[in-house]
Length: 267
Image (cartoon, rainbow, N blue to C red; front, side, top):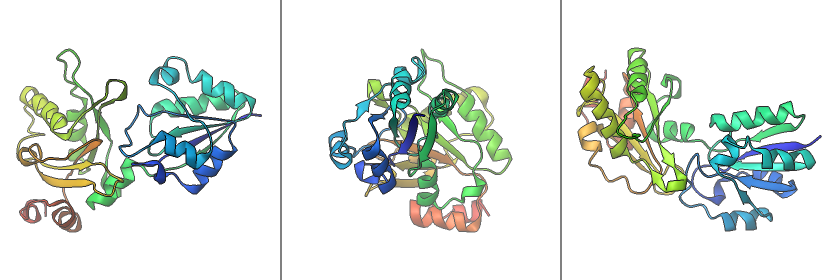
């Protein structure tokens, strides 16, 4: 029986991988990695290869989505293959599909978890984990079309008193990484059409950049102010808080520079 091990790389650079992850790579006959679902700003593949003592083959979105991960599954059928993924390896549905395909072929699968943007944003912001609702990706506009799904998800979560984590679109092959300003502009464009007062210049929002690094940028404030804040290099992430617990308000003020007025506004 072959084996496929999914290994999370963490958020920032090659030092984020766990010791267990390194051991799994060293024991593997073939090692693959993808970097299209997220960007790790400080990662050096060469340094990761030196740590693991193995050559790492980079696979594209096409390999996973159009070829159904066949090169990876072929190697896993022969022995043990490791598949390296930024963050936690099974956040992306593409990778869940690959794991299902492996199991159906009689390939044993295991997961070595890594730090995820989900847990990182919770820790950096102080917003309570159990108060998050459905997350959503804000995509780049296509031929002038702006998706209304993120706007609708934020509204649905807010009605239920839940925070919304918004991933920002990444197109690694094109070296395009959506910024917080672009994401907010997309939502404001939707607001102009929908007019449900979900996203206005006075809506409270949290922006996070380069989570997992030594110098992440974490800034909370009103949309009009956050749009003009310099978040620096990607990756960027947005959070739309719902009604706040007093401790969450204090955390946003202390940890993310939110305006003092939110103590009264979100009691």
